[in-house]
Amino acid sequence: MFFSFNFVRLNNYKKCYNNISGDDMQKILIIEDEEIICNELSALLENSGYIPLILKNFKDAKTEILKLNPDLILLDI
Image (cartoon, rainbow, N blue to C red; front, side, top):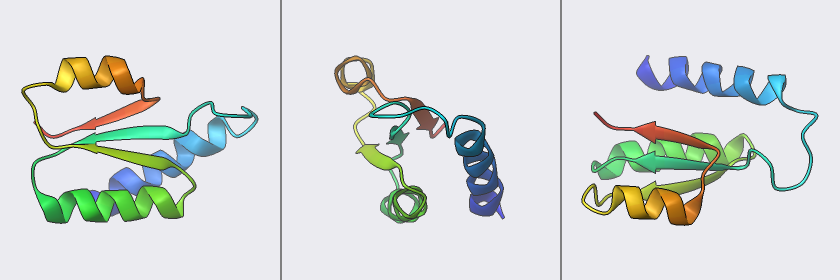
């Protein structure tokens, strides 16, 4: 249920901004330490036309976020 709820919200987000062209709103950063969750989210996002980026090291998160400049961050809290 967790994945389908967030997946629906991401699809709605994509539909709201579908007039944006080029590299806008393509990269979504997943900050998660569990491999299974990373794989599932990555597959869902990729199938929806996004570029999933995965970060498993929370220690360097700030540096990586600034370097990668994602359009959206899904954060494990």
